Amino acid sequence: MLKPQTWVLRLGHRFVRDDRLTTHVGLVARAFGASGIYIVGGEAFVKASIDKVTETWGGPFTVELVEDWRTLIRSWKNKDGLVVHLTMYGVPVDEVIDEIRSANKELLIVVGAEKVPKEIFHEADYNVAIGNQPHSEAAALAVFLDRLYRGEEFKKSFNHSKLRIMPSSRGKKVVSLKEEEDSGEK
Ligand code: SAM
Image (cartoon, rainbow, N blue to C red; front, side):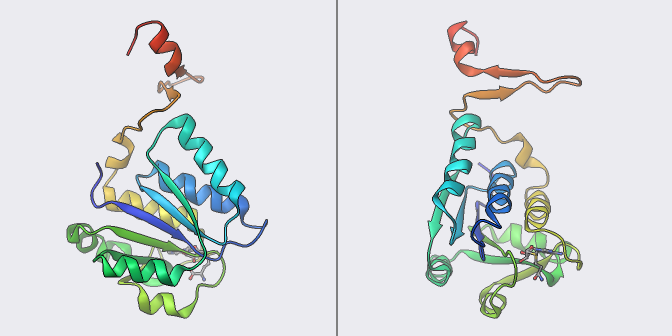
């Protein structure tokens, strides 16, 4: 298991407008080694589309729709977890990533959509910038997780997947694990 374990808190999801991007934040979180995502104000079908990917490509990866981020952050701190807020106004990732990794505490990584409430900047243990230019929550999350796990996230094995990709220099090679079982391969 990757250490420290991470969960993502997606704030500020805007009805309809952010459906695709919030889904992408969830998919990035899963593919880059996080254990789950909490989505504030997200719709059930956003959760369903991330869950569907986990069902096909493996997990575990949890998706929870939450109403109240304050309660979540409070409980995270009460259990001695760390809250890391990704923002272009924060301190450069390379200045703090070793300290964050070596604390070895469960991390809640907060990403916004539009404007994040000021309170988050104070509640967070770390406000971390992935460069000091505006870009995207999906990109910021991917870079942060990759720096945290130093590339080890791509060696993670996903359990109970239905499909697996056989890396190939040309074309698409996808193995159905059901077929593997049927032919006695493992
Ligand atoms: N003004 C925002 C900010 O505070 O970063 C930019 C809004 S951006 C559309 C949405 C989210 O992407 C932000 O809430 C933040 O989590 C993430 N983000 C964008 N650029 C970032 C950067 N350079 N470093 C870290 N996170 C960033």
